[in-house]
Image 1 (cartoon, rainbow, N blue to C red):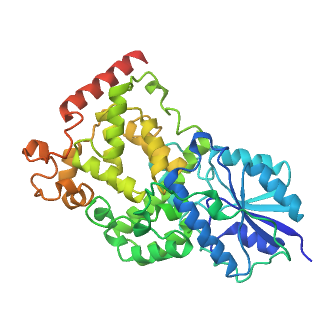
Image 2: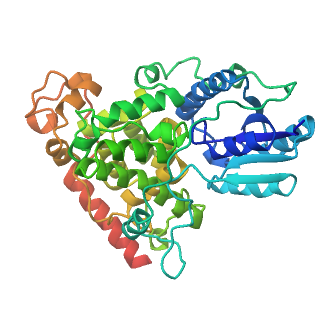
Image 3: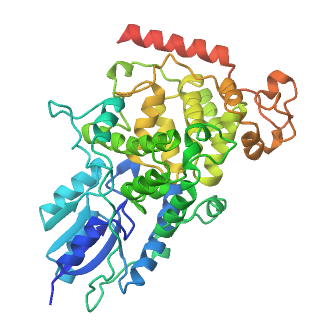
Length: 463
C-alpha cells in the first residue's frame, strides 16, 4: 500500500490544471491540507474582504474534493509547524505544493524543506517567476520588455484536467471546522453585497471565463468605461488559484484570436507574472519605495490628513468618480480598474498621503488583494516604482470622469447624485447643484496639483 503524501493548498484552490495534485496522486495516498497562518505575513495577513472569499472558496474546494471521495484538512497556526505535525501524524514522507513567491511563503517553503521532502511545482503563472530573463540572464524590471520576452514563450502549455480519482487514506486526521475560523463578518455584516457579485470556487471561475469569452473582443475599449460591465472580473478567481492562467489564456485566446481586445486582455494577465517577478526581486515592495529618491517625500500627516484619509475611505471626498469607486470597493470588495487608478492617484497626489496607507486599505477591502499586484500598482500610480507613472503626471479626476462617461456608474454608487444630468454629475459643486447631503471637495484640483508639485520639488532638492 502506498504511503501518505500531503498536498499543501495555499492560493491554488482548484483541482483542474493543478500540478501539485496530479503529482501527489501519482505519489501516494493524498492528504489535502490548508493552513491558515496569520502570523507569517505580518501586516499582510489576509484582509477582511479576502477572508470572506477564502471561506467560500475553501467550502467549494472541500465539496469538489468530497465528490471524489477526498476532503480538505483545515489547520490553523504556524504553517511550518502545522505541516510538520500533520506529516508526522499521518506518516507522510513528502509534501507536494505549488510555488508561491510572497516573501513569507518562500521562507516557509525553505523551513519545511529542512524538515520533510518538499516538492514544489509550477502552475500559478504563465511562466515560472524568475524564468523570464534578459540576454544577460538578469530579471526584467520594466514591464514592456518583460512582456515581449514572455510573449515569445506563449502560449502556455495546455491545461490538464482534474484527476478522475484521488487516492485517499483509510482514516483521516483531525481537522478544524471552517465555521470556527470566523472568516465571515458577523455584526455588522459589511459583506452583504459580496454574494450578489461573486461566486467563489472553481465552478464559479469557469462560469466567469465562459461569460467573458463573448465580451473579450470589446475589452480594449470597454475596460475603461466604469458604467459598462467591460472588465473580466477574473482577478479574485486568479488570485485564489481557482482557475489557472493557462486555462484563461487558452479559452480567451481561442475565442478571439488576433482581436485587439483579446490581445489587450492577455497582456493584463501577463501583468500578474510581471508583478510576481518584481516581488521576487524586491520582497519588501509593499512597504518600501522602489525609487529611494522618494524617501525624503513630505507626505501629509496629522489630524487634517487623517480626516482626509477617512473621507477617502468612506467615499466622501466631494469628487463623484472617486467616491463612487470607494463605495463600490466597500460594498462589493472590488473596484473597476480605471477607477482604481483615479482613486489611488487622488489619495497620493490630491491629498498627498503616503501610498502605503492606500495599499493597506486596498489590501483589507479587496477580495482580489494580491501582495504583488497591489504593491506594484500602488507604486506605479505613486511614481515610486521601478516601472511607474511619473509623479508629476497628476490625473485630473473630473476630466477622467467626463472622458470615460462615468455618469451611470456615479448614479449607481453615489445615490444622492442620481437625479443629476450628465452635464452636472461629474462636478456638481462647479455646476452649483450639489445636494446638501453630498460633501464639499476636500481640496480643489488646482490647489492640490500645486501642493503636490511643490512637495515633489522639495523632495528632489533634498535627495
